[in-house]
Image 1 (tube, protein in one colour):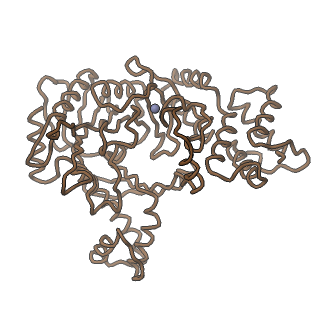
Image 2: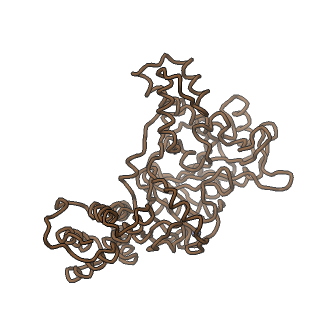
Image 3: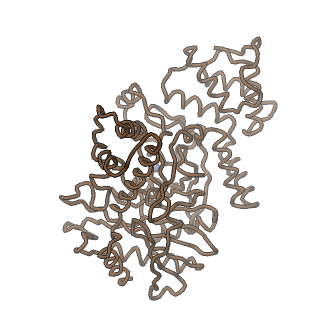
Amino acid sequence: MLLNQQLVQQFVTHAITFGDYEQEDCIYIQNQLLRILNASGIDTDSEAQLSEDATANTIAQYWIKQAVDEHCLEDALYKKENVEAQILDLITPRPSVMNRHFAEAYKKSPEAATNYFYEMAKRNHYVKEDAIAHNINYEVETEYGDIEITINLSKPEKDAKQIAKAKAEPAKHYPKCALCVENEGYEGSVTQAARTNHRIIHLKLDGQMWGFQYSPYAYFPEHSIVLSEQHVPMAINKQTFINLLDFIEQFPHYFIGSNADIPLVGGSILSHNHYQAGKHTFPMDNAAEIERFNMDGFSTVTASTLHWPMSVIRLKSENRVDLINAATHVMDTWNQYSDEAIDIRAFSNDGERHHTITPIARYRQKQYELDIVLRDNQTSEAFPDGIFHPHADVQHIKKENIGLIEVMGTAILPGRLKEEIRQVKTYLLGDKSLDLGIHQQWAEHMKQTYDINQQNVDDIVGKEVGYKFKRVLEDAGVFKNTDSGRQAFKRFIKQL
Ligand SMILES: [Zn+2]
């Protein structure tokens, strides 16, 4: 395989403009490209193959396709991703250089620094904007305000060959997990993501070193991950509030939150302590305050409950230390709190802990805010998947854990729903031959409730998905939005 000379020159220009290279490096870059793509030389005869303004990623994708077509590269997703990351590493500054640029931009403003980093992560295709664009996104109006629905179609499916190969592969112990800092620049393998073009910004939170990176398959603008530089398990405690507010102090234009630290109510990775941050206003941010209350000993802190399907206490203060202490008091009280009448139990008889919180921090109207979402991960005979987890009748839409992003009112729904919902619509429009399986009951309900036709079917089904998600959140709420639930919430608040 030969690489088109014109295209190599175009790529070299990107590497010099954005990477660590200078004009004298152009032959060196050319030879790196030949090595990465398993190519044998340069084609000096043919015309340019892409337009002059082709991005580095467009050129990389062109070469990857060429390499596959000419049998220089196996047509396996992980191999192609590996080559892509290596090519685009050439247009990415070294970690030290990038951290220096970030620090320089930060002197201008925190936004300038995150803009610099985000643009770089999009340019080198670490953040996969093109894949993210495949997601289906819309909003649904509910009594809690508009909630957001995302059907996640961005992550490419692993093919059967890769799954089989990965199974045969011996377990890897380096890096310890997908979040470890050792992923920076790591080549990847059949079981590990390609990270040659991956970069991490190093931050201090309360004197400790943390890494800051963007998420390749973002669920909202500038979706980022803040991770401990140590591979230590998730833990929600006073230090969490200190760290979250320290981050907000440094990046007041971002929110930051953490998944819970026990199974069933948290995210998918409990083994490595991390937070999620970004530049987005979530539905819960706009939730109305229901009732304000005071907490003894925290006079600078305003506390309120929110009109929201999950049980949230919002704390606000200009004083960070007071806010941290008040949040710790709420969390400690909840972690010990039981109310048998409504199935809330902090511990099982064998001493297993069931309570934790999902915390979210932001800076708004010159005040720090901490939202404390109360969580309980018990299971029971009636609810084997979780008492405060999506119940069986809504699991056809969402059966996964309700993590930080969902808590805030943004549904991340599985990609399978795209095709399944299309079938539901076909059925509703009269094709009786379809067996809808897990969606059958839901479809019958819609059929009885609405007069459905070609014009309104998209709208009705879209809204009904939103209502199901609202129910998912209500299931996850510990104090229900009923008279008895609100009374129970008041009993808890009296303890504060
Ligand atoms: Zn790790």
